[in-house]
Amino acid sequence: MAYFLDYSSPRFSPRCFARLLSDARRLIRQEKVELVQANSAAPCQWLAPAARSLRLPLVVHLHASYLTRSRYVCLLHLAHRIVGASQHALTGLREDGIPPGRTQVILNGVDAARLGIPGQGLRERLEIPQDAFVILAVGSLISRKRHHLLIDAVSRMSETSHLVILGEGELREPLEQRVRELGLSKRVHLPGSWPALASVYADVDCFALASYKETFGLVFAEAGLCSLPAVGVRGGGVTEVIEDGVTGLLVEEGTEESLSESLSLHLSALSQNEAQRSALGAAARARIAREFDGKRMVEGFHALYDQLVAVPPAQRGWSSIHLTPYLALRSRLKSSPHP
Image 1 (cartoon, rainbow, N blue to C red):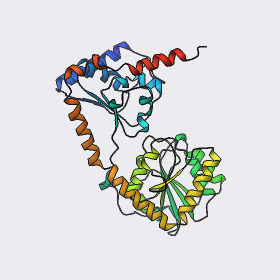
Image 2: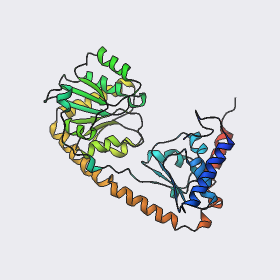
Image 3: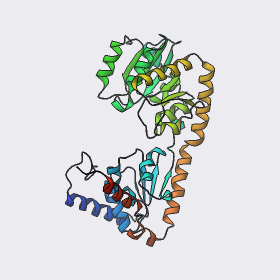
Image 4: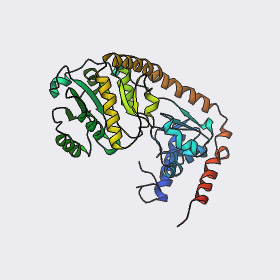
């Protein structure tokens, strides 16, 4: 599914766009749809005009934040309600001037039944001593995850500290090279993907990620539900999952040197204080179970659907579009310097 007129998009095809719009309208009529939902920005490009023309409510569920151009190109402002997986996912839209009543946050639910599985020998398989302090990171091996900062942080810690990074990606070779250069081949482990990820949480002592502005950070929530304290970088949706000093620890964004040092200090402190790890982990489990419950998420969407379906059809068409975001865009374009 591709964006039209956006960054790295295919050339705009009026015929293709018309077909998508026509197919959407046909399926809506055929299935007697009462409400339309898009689970990302891209399909909103044709679902928004389809829903508006048929006077049906459109919900867009966003799991990422989008650049200004993408927000307008994807016609997000035409949705009747935009749901974010975090406050961070909605920041740009609110800056555009979209009315407060048109956006809301429904936190992702974490599947508790899938977690809490007993450990399955992670330490034995990776030859990590049973008395070692093990830090877990989960995420694709890509630049935005900044795994190299955790590797640098571990190089500053005691030799009893180990780091396990689960994931695959284009930066595997550079990360492995960095591990070798720092002499950490026996303490930093990159085994790739893991067959039973849910069981890994029981085999480690702490969770950490140095990602740049995660929109939500599901793995932080999963770790918390498994009573693991987490260390992350303040920014984006991470601050909505980790309550600094209560359920985990946050470091301030900065240079790579300052980030590595701060991560090292926080992780070293946790490695030496089992009581603090237990307290943070217990608080994390209680908060995640309370606020990131799957049932609560479902109930939130059901309540939203009931609310939108109850709106008279006359208020769902083109006449109910709020022009504020478009007037704001016009002002931005006028004030932008021209070459």
